[in-house]
Image (tube, rainbow, N blue to C red; front, side):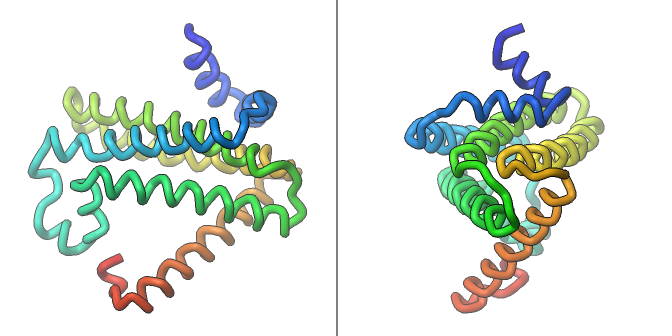
Length: 198
């Protein structure tokens, strides 16, 4: 197997140990942010691909009920949304984690979340292939990807902030996501966007 595939397999087998190895690379900020924008672009392209392959996948009723899904039809805007979300998430997890007694560097959190997004991009390729070959399995596989991604995220947060348990990572993640959601709702309210628009 190639080194990248080996690293992906090791991530699933031993997420904490692999996270420490990745942190040990000591990549500089410029390289990390370049990688972040690259994986954001790849994720945006792969997220929009199903609508290109299956034009009727997003019907009018779904589009009206969840207008945010229309981003899938605009890959460039989706790219900025994903990249911006990643940057905000890294900052929020790092500073909130520090407030909760965590240690480590910003680069540690950044490199691990970039690697996680790279893994998600690979999983998206598998979902697209399954949609073409065995559509009934694609949804189940996508659900598994969500669960595994959440599990890896907890391990990565714990490793980046030197937490003693996954419960601390879970508490931090819940607090950060809740805070970001409330903040976004406040901004959207001030902009005159309804909750339905979100």
